[in-house]
Length: 138
Image (cartoon, rainbow, N blue to C red; front, side, top):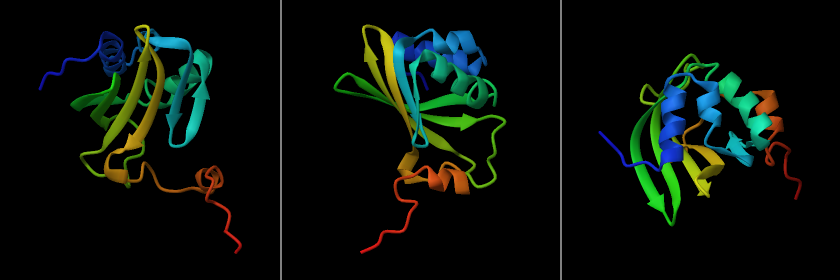
C-alpha cells in the first residue's frame, strides 16, 4: 500500500529502512525531541545517539500501515522488524509515531505502542524511570 507522506517523514522512513544514520537524521530540526518509552532525547546529538543504537543499530525496518494527518501533525503506524528483542512482542508488532513538523523539519516524534501494548518486558531500570514506580502512600 502506498501513502502520501510529507517529504521529511518519507525521507525518515526510507533512511530507516536502509539503515542510513545520516539520512535518518537529515529531516530533523536542530532542537528536536524524540520520546521513546518515556525516555526523552533532546537535540540532534541525543537523537542521533538514540538512532545509532536503537534504530539503525538494531536494523529496524518500518513497514508503513497507516497515516493520519491530524491538524498538520502526522500519526504514522508502522509494523517494525529488526534485531531487537521481540521475545514478548506480538508477531505483527506495530508502533505509532506521532510526528510534529515545522518549516519542513521534524521537531518532535513520540513513539507509542499501538493499542497500548507493552513495548518490552519491564526491568528495574525502566520501572524506576516511570512516575508510577514508587508505591503511593495514602
